[in-house]
Image: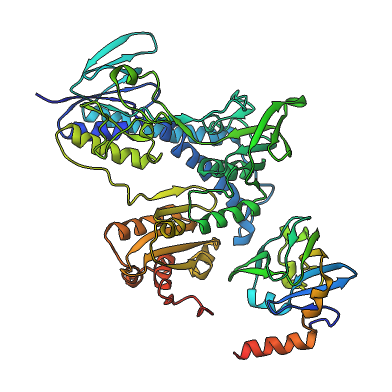
Length: 466
Length: 129
């Protein structure tokens, strides 16, 4: 008899687990509260990328004369059409997942899932209809939501979370973004491109503090170039509504910022409440994250957890991989999650991609390293494209020469990063990476040059004076 | 032509002194080396700058280079025109392409800087290296 597997949550973790388990012969039921695809597809990765695509099209049109292209009249945009395009892209992907479910015989129930016992999941549909699903194994993939702090009077109109901002209902004349992490920076470039005056407030000393310092520095400069104001080392203490529908935010250092809207992007909190964890005795951590081992097992046998709700790395592709691991193990396999090679992309303008160790992290770990760099402006292709901002940075072990980290900022960085991921995973040395023939003319040549630069051998870089 | 009423720093910045006020820019040689300038990252007014420390970063189609401050003091004026037209530096490095004005905290620092002739000799030597 086929194993009965029930998954709560159909985001990039849950739906991938569902398909893999069905491929392996399980009888799968997936319970989703909202829409398949989760935050990633409905409120995150995909809708923001369609907005960025519109913003980039606008920027290209504004720069048309640089390329000898003449556009008569003023370049403008139509917000309704931008939203329409975004919704179309999202709904196409949603349909795609639903049809994959159908083809693999996966039962989708739209309703709120909770665990009654280690072998029963209850789904409560919108109309109140309740269904108890008998399950051999359970995977929790309930995800996360934007973190809220009481100092911000969220209303979805003037004080927004990323869930609201992605709807792009209007472009305010002025926008304060609280938190200059990945989400804050992506929205800063989007709203700026559409004409908002953007100010960012970050309590840490720099924007994108999880990235390599040199990558953060480039993005900070690009924020400046885009005339986005970034205030660091300071917190917002209070926000209140004042006359004319404006919002007044008071900073800890006494400064006041008046804006039409505020976007709060200060992290995400786990959806681990009201899903039956307490009664079942599933262990959670201080942030509300479900505790799991590297097989994605919780402390309750037969109950697995994956994705944002386990709080390891809140990335869609990490959730998906955890889903594969959980599905395999639920079906009797023995596979483990390995976090050493996780590429990640940031869709700022320009983009950033990273994998492996940051320079600071490597030094903190006591590693002896060598660093190679190559600037985009050293590439013919970058000049041809009119995208000369950016760099590739390769970090390698001083003794073994093995690549430990690759960091890219610049056009197509998020696509180029995977060469670095493969290099790290396969234990490739900087010398080997630099000796691989790279097609000309491409931006990827910068990866080759940066790898060669680890040993001072980049062809298109002047002799270093040191 | 390099003017002779200004002082030069070996990292290719220049200073024009009027009382305690020092206008700072980069030399013609520097702008030539950089090529087409696409962006200048300037400090805000009221920022303190120290002699021999980085006061700005200039980005050209060839490189991103720091500008080292020849003197110490407080920034009192910033050339706002450079935000939209950084190429002014290429066109007029000693005039409209100035970067900032500093209220000097130690005007004697100017004495350590080079004259036009000394700077030209210095550049020549550097090129021959």
